[in-house]
Image (spheres, one colour):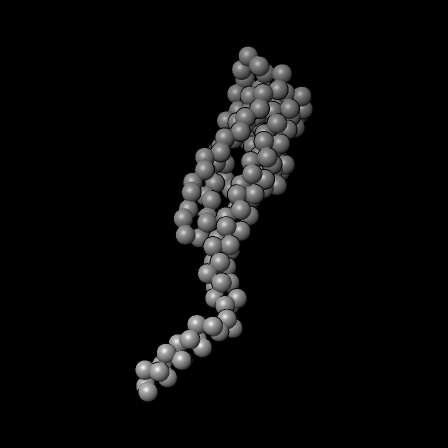
Length: 130
């Protein structure tokens, strides 16, 4: 009799689908959230790279055209930092005269944080203005 009751209980339990949505959500939600956070972090890296490229282009233009504003390396770096709107980073700058004109470059390492794994992405941007 006991085995018949337990088999009946197992059959009733196997046919019960209440709570299956909660179990499926519990399995999928962590993967989805990690992917979402990684995607947002990647978007921030791309935005930072684009913003730094814009600022470096402006710094090269300033060094070439606005010689009263961008007098030396420190003023060019200050100009670039004022025109950079990305995440809070400390890039390294280089400013020199080359055949193409005033050459300015900046580089930094962005850490892509995906909660379970971190990836370091080296980013270097440069611009030359005649």
